Image (cartoon, rainbow, N blue to C red):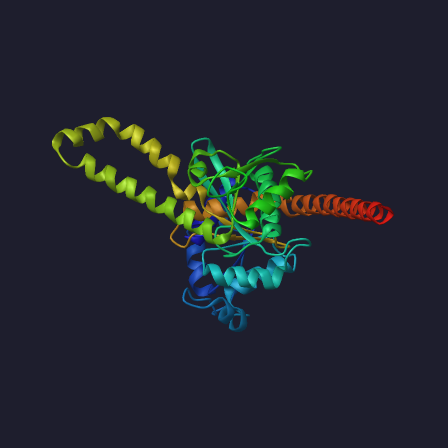
Length: 342
């Protein structure tokens, strides 16, 4: 899947070159099957790997020579523009954060991904990296998500919504209400639309949906499960009788278009935003088409300098935030002075 995905990505991006980390004896025969990879791949051998069952802390301590860690190190050392892995998510996150470090102004990296919607595609984060978040974390997610949408979706000023239990200003916990107050006042290349609810995700009410990792992961898995349920219902319904089977034959072109529209392979790739390097997690159950999508995502982020965009936006926000704090402090001092004079 990885080698086949690399070959497909190379056809889509003719200037792409690869470093493959792993067992050379297993990788080399696979490479010989793909003409597109001839002369553009360097295999770096290691027989150590991170298992799916490994804890992130265990992988971080014991996996220094693993294929995953060496691939991440290549990004940290400037040998590669980004790393793409279908391995252990927790280990990839822990190793990426350790080797690449968090960007200035970012307290916690977040997992960001695409979701198909009625309007096309939306960006959502965090999808599971941070179970609990405060208002500053959510604001940082909004800034990173908007930069991601501008880079990958080509939106000059993406709309951003905070996932909440209602659209009213008084609803929600202190973190979402505090983040909303900050985003309402911030001068950023985004349009803050306030609160959005769970059904707004599939509607595509905003280009970017911001939430904590707990709610984001639950929402994502719920959508995936609902899509599988709907598909199973359709298969059962079309197979109930000869007439329904005939109906399926007549609807086959439309069903094929539907499958293509919601095919998870075309939305594959969870990005760890907030790090000083590009790190992309592919779903472990993907085929070569899905893995090529994840590679293409990494290519686009490198080509459009996503990290530079986030850095610029964070600096602009921090400068505005500092100025606002100084203004508020000056106002408090003036108020106290008038009180003393009276």
